[in-house]
Image (cartoon, rainbow, N blue to C red):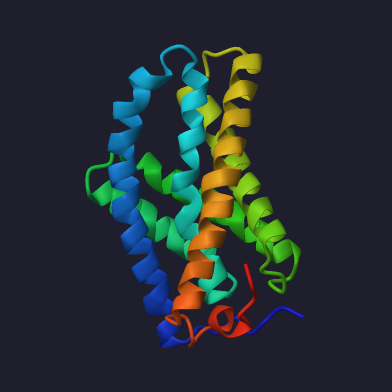
Length: 193
């Protein structure tokens, strides 16, 4: 049984707050992305290990609020904030955000919004990376050979597992342990890390 899809005011406010905070992080991460290019000059596809940061709004919101649509809403709002702040990818950021948020929703929906463990969180991270890869290849990397595109995808998945998967999981667990999520099912579950 899928949990009640009705959102409380606190669900909307907290999801929006998560999204706005991560929107600023996403914008700043775009600057880090550009600044880090020289570090990856020997193997440019390896830069995609940094990509996972851009999936964290969706995963953290889903883990905190535990409502259908939280991941999509958070990722789209975060992408909007990034674009409004002048993010280097412009309005395409909204397309990316929608795809990434939807991909995260698929992972939690596959378990009928009943499982909130690290395995499903890692699945959400992988699906977000795959969604981003599907979007980015024809938009940014259409001239690369398929083998090179696949290498980018592998680095995206690795980075997503570490940053978006484990990172979002640990961040949410830290918020639970602090007690700030007491109004949410995630805060009442008190599962040990």
